[in-house]
Length: 125
Image 1: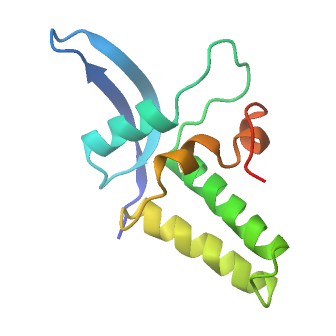
Image 2: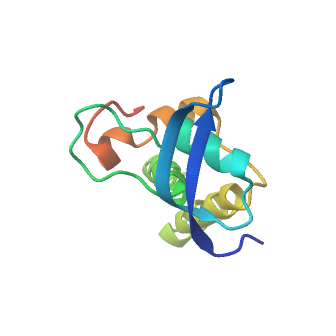
Image 3: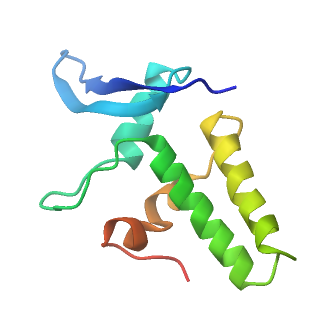
């Protein structure tokens, strides 16, 4: 079971000890390792230069974005009998990823819901 989120800093140093990536005040599940925190922050929560929107601070935001996309695609494709069924998929996906029992692959993290959530990029259709 994933414990409550706590604020943490993701920090990556090069072989000489110089910090090459840092993001502070991340809301990360307390039982995630520092390595998992560093990877998620550096690969999936980076911020493009010049973008003025709110910064993503929590992996949960990323995870829920992916779940919303799958929920919407499944619902629009007629894969669910009820909207409650579609919501259950969204909730189950969030649970699996937040507890690190499963993960979306990198292309999903990089593309799904980016235009909706951040206002740039593209969305798979």
